[in-house]
Amino acid sequence: MKKKIVIIFLSIFSIFIISCKSQTTNQGQQYKKKFKNDLTEIRKINIKNQIINSKALLIQIKKIKVSSPRLYFKNKIIYQAIENWLKTKSNINDFYKFGIHLFQMKGVDNYGNVKISGYYTPIIKAKKHQQNNFIYPIYSTPYNVKKHKLLPKRKEIYNGILDKKYILAYSNSLVDNFIMEIQGSAFIDYGNNQPLTFFSYSGNNGWPYKGIGQILINRGEIQKKNMSMQAIKTWCKKHTIKEIRNLFEENKSFVFFKETKKTEVYGASAVPLIEKTSIAVDNSIIKNGSIILLQIPLLNKNGIFINKYEMRLVIALDVGGAITGQHFDVYEGIGEKAGILAGFYNHYGYAWILNKK
Image (cartoon, rainbow, N blue to C red; front, side, top):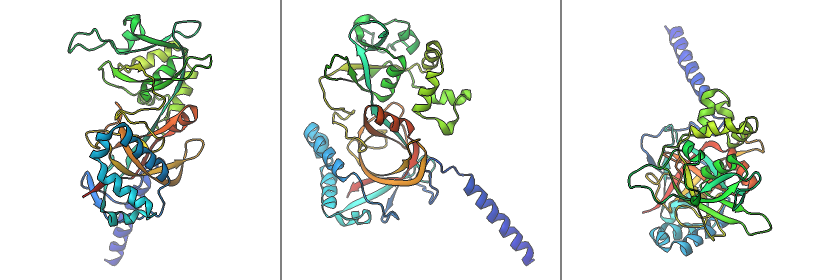
C-alpha cells in the first residue's frame, strides 16, 4: 500500500515538474503566483533592485506640470508622495510609509505577466516634392469626407485614391513610412542641414489594425520566438517592393499625420515623452497620468533575454491602436539605436499600479 502511495506521489510530482518546464520563460515570464482579480493589493515585494530612473521620472513629472496642468493636478497627490519617497532614498517596500499602495496587475495569463513592447520616434528622410526615389507619400487627414463614411483602405490609398493636396511629403522608403505609422510619429529630415520637423499623429482611416508580424508568423516565414521589428525589416530587404506592398495591404488600417513646430516628442496626453519613463497603455484599464512600478526584462545586444530585470517607475502618457489589455508599450527614444531596442521588445514583466488612498 505504501509503495502504491509513493508511486502515485512521484507520478503527480513528475507531472507538476513537466508542466512547469513546459511554461515559456524565454521572454521574461514568471510563474510565482496566480491572481484571481485584475488588481491585487501587495504590501511587500520580494525584489531588492533599486529604481534606476529616479531623475528621469522627476523630469517627466515636471513636464506634465508645465504642459498639462490639468493632468498634473489630477494626479498631484500621488506625484508628491513619490517625490517625497525618492528624497528619502527608501526601498520599494517602504512605499506604504508614504501612504502609497501597490496593486499588482494580473497580466495576460493571470500569473502577473504583463506584455511589454517598445516604440520609438524614427527619423525619416523626405522631400516636399516628388523627386528621384522620393516617391512614397506621407498623408495628412482628409477632411472632405461624408459623416460616418469610412476612409479608403490602405490598398486604395497606395493606389492614389486620395487627392494630392493631402500629401505632406515624400519619403524614399515605403517600409519607413509603414514604421512611422506603427510608431505614431516621426521627425522628418528634409536634408540640406534643415532642422528636423516633427510629424505627429493626426488620425487613421477607421479600418481595423492587423499586425503584419502575425501574418508572417502564420505564413511560417518568421518563427514566433524570433519575431521583432528587426526580423520584419530583414524580411523586407529580401523581398521585392511588390511583395512588401502586398504584405502591408493586408493591414487595411492607415495612419495620417500633421506637421508641427514641436522640438520634442509628444504623446496622446499632450506631454513631452521621456525615454524609458513614458509608456503607452490601454486607457480603458490605466488612466492617463498613472504611475506604474514596472519590472522590465533586460536584453543583450541581440535582443535575447538575459534572465535579469530592472525596476522603473513609468507614467502612462500615450496610447496606441495595438496596445490593448494587459500590455504596456515603453517609449525608447529617438533614432536608429532606440528603434533597434524597441524592435526587440516583445517580452513580459510584472507591473504594479501606484495609488494614494
